[in-house]
Each structure stands twice: as structure tokens, then as C-alpha cells.
Image 1: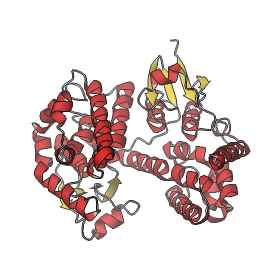
Image 2 (image 1 turned 180 degrees about the vertical axis):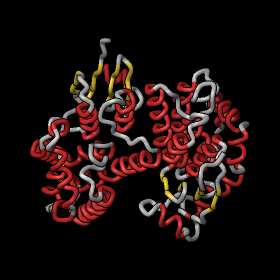
Image 3 (image 1 turned 135 degrees about the horizontal axis):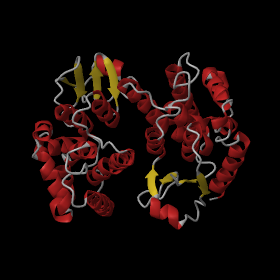
Image 4 (image 1 turned 120 degrees about the horizontal axis):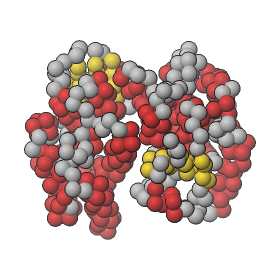
Length: 219
Length: 220
């Protein structure tokens, strides 16, 4: 049965990276279309008319939008390989809770560290470390949030691991100093091909952010 | 039908807590509803079972806490599978989750912007709010419910937010029924369900609560 799987993404988007990791974990072959977010394609606008954002997964012509919803969809369709969500309802609720926590907190703290200075930046750094420590608590002594294998929380959080370097340079601090367990987790995950092939290279991310910052400063 | 001890921490006017209640009612689950005094002191149980956000709803099932309303509703659907709230097909499920997420992002914030603003800013807020409801009317189409023939996940996520619409209408001097008749008809259809009617508070009382919040936050 010929299947068409297309991912509309953008290289530095942590949200698109989540989908890439999920597809790689499941060993799914797909076509990747890189969007120019300053000049969105008619395909993107047609497939995600509500938010006009990436990632969009197009499976046999039908679009699925919003990264964590896409990851759940992938997990349900290709359920026989590398399950990302546990089968127990309570554990599934916990996985969804922490993935949602990552969505609510990490992106915004990180953004503030990059774009602000002084007191506002200090507050953002403090909040980021607090949030990462809470995630360390959830990780506990497990190799991955998913236990012995990558799970839903790992997929939700991993893209931000490649942004840690940029946060550290912009904020002049060390995430490893306060959250050694989490950094160890990131390194462990990077040993998996599905992750190392999907994550952006951290220096590239930093270069991209520097350009973004310059644009903001000039504007 | 009960499977162990079920406790729900709620606040009477919280539409998020109402979602959890309606889901439990739909499944016929016996539960103890404990009201939190969110304007006063939060209980030790709330603070210990939801230490990160300290918000309602919190569902405690045999002592284990589930937080965040959409996640609570999903949990209820999975722990008590009958009748199902989500469709069985993965694609339809993803669409239901998408619209639940859209409603979460747009409706409450959009509606609350109406009573938090005045003049031109308020007119913009009303216009955007109505556009959101019109988009949802398109999603509903000719179906009775967002779930199709059956009341489902998206309906449960949306209908409690509609209990605040009367308040928005009062402050914004507009009527959802006139602007979005299909959406209004869907609201009525939901309110006719026993599980929903049992949970949704008196709309005038919600309005009075919003008036009080408006004063408290200095929006008058």
C-alpha cells in the first residue's frame, strides 16, 4: 500500500523537531518540505488555514497540526513500533501533563533569556532552572522520561536540548551546573540515531539566534 | 458505575472544572466533588496534589492526582472507556484534539478580553470573539454536536466556556444568538443534556462573579 507522508517543517523549529524524532523512532520514511516562514507556501496555508504554522504532517493528503497532537497521531497509527505513550491511563495523563508543562514553560523562558537583559533576563534564567529541576524530578533515576526507551516527554523536551547552548551564551550561565541530571539525559538521548539525526546542531541554533537578536535590536 | 475512590477538586464558576464534572457525569462515575475557596485559602489537598499550578480541576483517583482540564477529560475517557468521548479512528481523534486545543487557546481569553476592555479595544475584542465562534460554526457544520451524532470530547471542552457568554454579552452589548445562531443552537442542545444541565451554574450568578472580578482587577 503506497503511503504518502509529508512533513512541512522548518529546520530550527523545536516543534517540527518533535515530529522528526517521533517519525525516526518509528522508522517511518517521509518527505520533508522546508518552509520559508517569511513566504509561506500555498500548501501550508491550505493545510493549516487556522494557525498557518508548521509543523504540519500530511498523511495520505490529510493534514494534522500542532506538534504534540501530531506526535500522538503518529503513536496511534504506527502503534506496533516504539510506543511513545504508556498504555496505563494514569501514566498517559502524567506524560501529557509534563509535555504540556514543557509547552507552557520552556519556550517562553528560553525566549526571554535570548531577547531580554538585566532583571527580566535574570528572572527568566531563574524560572528556566526551576522548570528544568522539576523535569529532573520527573525523570528521577530513569534513563529516559519514557523509562527504558524514549517516550512522549522525551520527544516534547528534546528539541530544547539543542537550544541550551544558546540560552547559556545569551544568559551567561551554565545549565549543567544546576541541572546535571537533565544534561546527562540529553547526552544519553543524543546517542540514539533517531535523536542525533533530528536535532539541530547547537552552534547552528546559536548562530540563528544571534541573527534574530540583531534583527530585534536594530528594529 | 464506580471503580475506586474518585474526588474532584473544583470551583463553582471555573469552566475548566466543569469540563471534568461533565465528563464524569457522562461516564456515570460516582465521585465526591470538593469545592475549593479560590478567593480565600486553597486547601492543603489542592496545594499538595497540584503543586505546580495550584489550580482546579484536580481529579484524584484512588489518591493519584490528574491535573489540567483537557488532560483530566482524556484520563476520564481512558479510565472509564464507555461511552467513548473520542472517536476510534486516529485521524478523527487528532482533529478532535486540534479543535479542543483551538477552543482552549481562543475562546476563554477572547471572551474575557471583552469585559477587560472598553471603547475601540472592546469592539475589536467582540469582533474577534464572534469570528472565533463563526469558525467553530463551520467546524460544527450540520452536525448536532462537534462529536457528530454523539456529545463528545470537543463538546465537553467547549460547553462550560459558554456559561460565561451571558456575562460577555452583558458587557459587550451583543447577543451570540444573533451573531452566531448555529453556535447558539448547539449551546442549547448541550444545555438540554442532563449531565450538562446538572453542572452548568446559573448564568446570572456567573455574570455577578465577572462583575466582581472586574471591580477587583480595576477594569471598571
